[in-house]
Image (cartoon, rainbow, N blue to C red; front, top):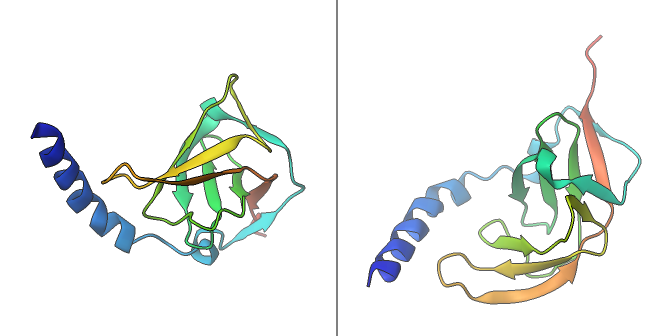
Length: 124
């Protein structure tokens, strides 16, 4: 019973956050893309945002931030991604499992693509 109650509370608490999720264009405003890289360091990841376009924004603790568009048809902002790696690197080809947080239901898995860095444009 406690698990059910906790799940219900988490789903209610997550709803306002999901409604306020920025679009990919809003999140990347004022940034310019760089050359793609195959890996990023997991310990430098501060936060992630999943966009309904299927892209994932990895906000790094000390910039630049990275976009990864793995092409997962079931990836949405109200779902969670789980990855299993054996190093401190998150790399192209690593498999993401897509999970619905309230129900725990899985929505498949897919490999990560290249990571595209987005740095803030310098003001003149």
